[in-house]
Length: 245
Image (cartoon, rainbow, N blue to C red):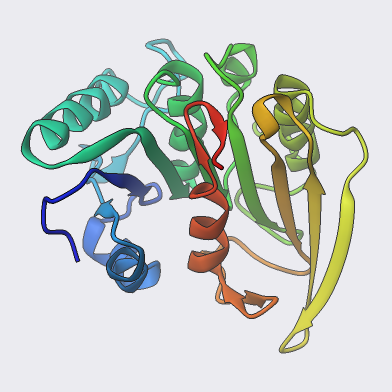
């Protein structure tokens, strides 16, 4: 639907560790949404590390998987896309799966002056990211399964618990401390939605708790919306200045 006649949003969707753009596109195909709502959709490819693709989800440090400057890569890519297409610089979003979700958090932390809002599917933040200071109130949506065997819902010695990540973004955004809770059953799977509203600049934090869910890009629906629609419908409500009119 893009014709260059007006500025449109830009959405990055990042694959997980060891993943490829093609495989992730097949799993999380947002092209129909991009056509429907006219936004530019980009699936970048992570660099190879000992045979596995990856994203460095922190500032250069021992925490990172390699010395590749992924933050610089996305910064360059935003500039390059913006010079070739009519990109709305206030509506650039990032979401991802697993390691790609980790990276989306890092972009909000360290490239926040360009990233309006983020989404995470089966991902968490690194310890170093919890020291980040986003440059503006940043809406965040998180979908995570309670039986995730790779990134445990309740955390581990290696990974931060999902409730702690949600709390972090609620505190950063000064949202309500108590969530509005709703629950639905989709094909035998219970899904709990936690909405923390009334943050600075009217941003909010949403968390979808998939009861029994594993380490997946979930094939679910909530209130008639698929995973892709849940993510885009949330992200598209915000720009760099908060909730859009």
